[in-house]
Image (cartoon, rainbow, N blue to C red; front, side, top):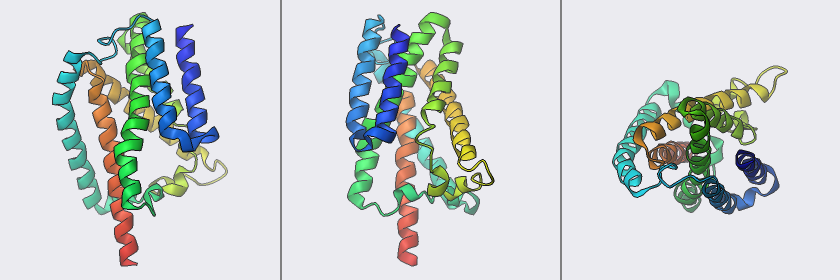
Length: 231
């Protein structure tokens, strides 16, 4: 019953964010995260089960700085290499003002995307399945659902990013880019769940998640802005 409630809440949030009310994205994410935490409490989960107790958060802070720095180093290296630079030419960052970029990096991504997805998939869902079936099942279920969560957001990915456009060929059309995104985010979910397990803190996967998305937006904006200036 409670697991079904979690799934239903996530389906509703996904539809709101990607179809029915995308303009209310951050609000939807915050309200949904709060609803999921209430369901977790109803299920008897503690803050420690969710990786949100004081000890876990302190431990997570020690991991977070290292992960954020590592992500930035990897992304800068990728930006410097011609073979991977194209991946940063993401049109979703095109035309953003500096204020809009800061809103995305400092508000939309951490308070919207990261808050909801980490609370949902590495917090509540992972803890609920783990208590019932063990860690392996928790990671598998959480990661597969995390991948499926990205079906709707991945529509049009090939038009936004030239690195994904190579998959948008033939009669399959947009199917291959979406399928690739689902596989990639499922794999990412496994990594994030493992970080959650090893650290015992929800803050650790959240920090990695924010770093990848936030720095990714910022570097894409910088690349596209530089290209616009040189044209």
